[in-house]
Image 1 (cartoon, rainbow, N blue to C red):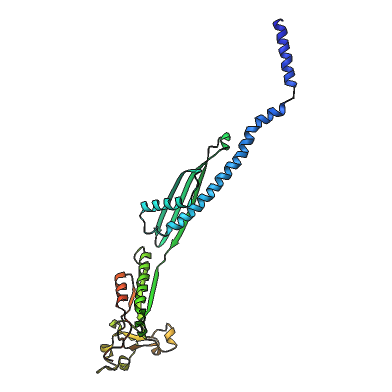
Image 2 (cartoon, rainbow, N blue to C red):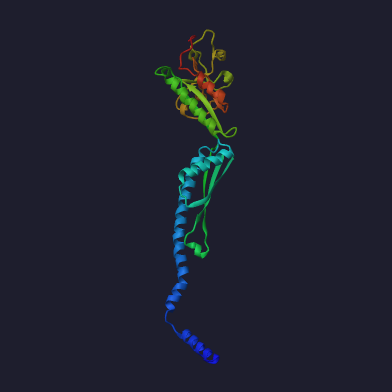
Amino acid sequence: MTNKTLRERVKRWLRKLRADEAGNVLVVFALALVPIVGLVGAGVDYSRASAAKTAMQAAVDATALMLSKDAQSLPPEQLGERATDYFNATFNHPEVTNVSITQNYTASAGNFRLEVNGTGKVATTFSRVLGQQNFDLAVSSEVVWGIKKLQLALALDNTGSMASSSKMTELKKAAHSLLDTMKKAATSPGDVKVAIIPFDVSVNLGTSYKDQAWFDVSCSALGSPPGCTNSNWGTYWEGCVRDRAQPYDTQDTSPTLNAQALFPIHDCGSLTQMIPLSEDWTALNAKIDAMASWTRSSSC
């Protein structure tokens, strides 16, 4: 067989092969199989990554809420350790790798902000054929709270009935506990101020106000001490006043504008003097310790 004849036969065979359509579907399917598998697998991989991200977001939310309770009292390095501990206790997804938890805590003028961020990776299985090696996860949660200027007046019962059934003892315990809470809530001077006002039928203002024109004077209200007159009553007064006459007992009418709105002076007995709004926590606690159930002055 000559070379020319061989060449002619090869050419005819190639032309016949090019025109033959048998088996084309199998070839096309084989070529399309890779992207089809990749696309279907990408959906499976995306579903896994989405579920992991949802779980990570829930864990970061829980971490931020738990961490916000202690954020004000923890130094930065402990804050980071606590954030990681809280997160690891609530997130159990081993398919997520390279997990990183960071936090940012800021405080300004009684306002507080805590942001917790979480990142990680989920390795793909099917999407690798399309060149996607990992899905990157990133979630964040923010907690914002604040304490505005707080002024609290504690009107504490010091009547004679408080001497029974350990009432005064329990009142002091509760008051000390509240002061401790208020002190911890104050992050800067002036955030929280508290007044202590012991009362029975009267309140002990202290004698520093005796020269003011606020008072309805009566020596009998002081137990009629010998030598007391309406002109020298301040010498015998220990600083107590009682309720004003109705309706001024429930109103803010100034006593300097209405003589009927004057404050009646009264015998103090054992009543402890009030302390006005203060952030001196030592003095406030000492005032609570000084309280006693009321008894009348021996001179009366």
